[in-house]
Image 1 (cartoon, rainbow, N blue to C red):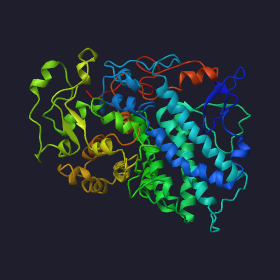
Image 2 (spheres, rainbow, N blue to C red):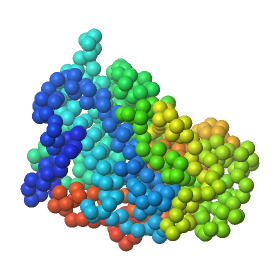
Image 3 (cartoon, helix red, strand yellow):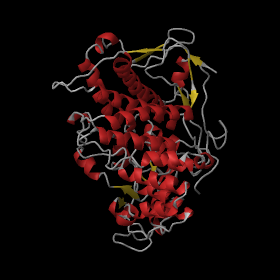
Image 4 (cartoon, rainbow, N blue to C red):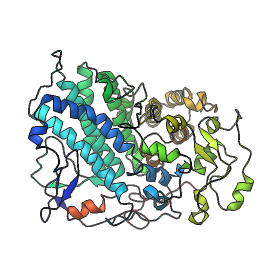
Length: 498
């Protein structure tokens, strides 16, 4: 197995310097020495408090990271423009991911990979001080805030490692206990996930045995207490376990009792910080929905209103579109006019494929697109409720699973008929709600949903490789995934939805 000698990823990453045959030295030459920057408890507290923003910005930066390309790759959204690898990742038939460092869209995976490790590095630096260095963080009134700071660091340590595991096929595990002067080896994505959940468990334990309230500006719009942070960590653990499978066989083998245990203690609120368009903003929600950019894929439209085709095939498709629904109609989801808006034309280019065309766009975030100051979700309570239902489906407790779904937005906002307590109806409803009610919320949600159901189009990479530029620095052989590259059904899809 290829190895990496030094893996120093500082939170303000600005340079990657090759310093030996198999070594990687990543450092920020503009920052003060580590010992100076983290010598004061107030400095460490400030870094911990900034982690909410740092991690949110990494997973909500669709333009320079993976959010938009995974969204179109899941046939949730559609966009023919070349920006953000959206055209390349949505070609039909699918093509392999170009993992060379010279690929114009290489930044999508590079930014995502390095960004998550940058957050992880800051968390490790904080934990090195408060857990290994016995630093005590004291508030101005004398309150011991060390548990609060430690809990935050473990939360984002877990989320950063976990999202590397969700998106990439493998990665490096580095925690506060890792000796960075020794050889680190890559580990498979499930090892990343398992380690991430253990980090989240530490956060959960601290939140359950301590009382604290975070500074108001750390998570704008949410009074984040130990209780709410514990709920967030529980939902995150359930998310990682539920979304990690690369195919349906793996999905059936998930420890669903464990998922349920986390989800039962999960979010009772939406984790949706209020944006200010300065430090807090989401380019994922912006470019997926702004006029002239992303639109809702016809697969989504057809799910809500089966009268519409699930894809455009030629110019004549426009002439066979039914009249749009604007009021409650039996058999049609009310959310097609509550959350989506009809368009009589599209700006996409014909020569790039009619399969990109759509007649609907997502309008639920239009207030954000006009004010830039609304609360924008990464995790919603609804997502946690569906995790509860999914765990009950697999245990099984079908009546309880159906009750959760029927109490949710599917019935209350969508106006759809309640589901029966059968495994097939419940499974289909969970899949449906993740595509419709949770449309364009968190990074990769629709992609992970399609992946674990074997519904991604044939040839679609099931995960991304370590970025080519990082492989070059590590003196590792380049590799990628796509049609014929990797193992079918494990590295690229051999399923599909049509």
